[in-house]
Image (cartoon, rainbow, N blue to C red):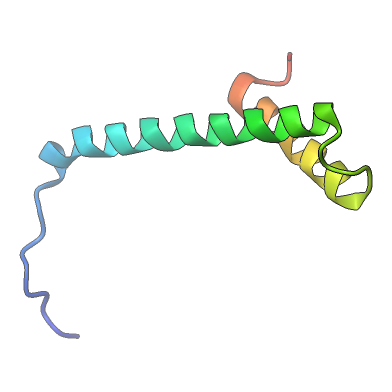
Length: 70
């Protein structure tokens, strides 16, 4: 196995970058969920298998994001 050219960065200073990246990722995922939900509610996605699959994913996303109570 070849040795990497750049040394690895220390993990502790990177944790803030990781938190910021994770926060941005979850924000974008939530926005995508909201758009899909609105498109389904407006009827912009014709009823059928794609709409059913998207609705299932929205419900699953909500369960993981907010818990089973909602």
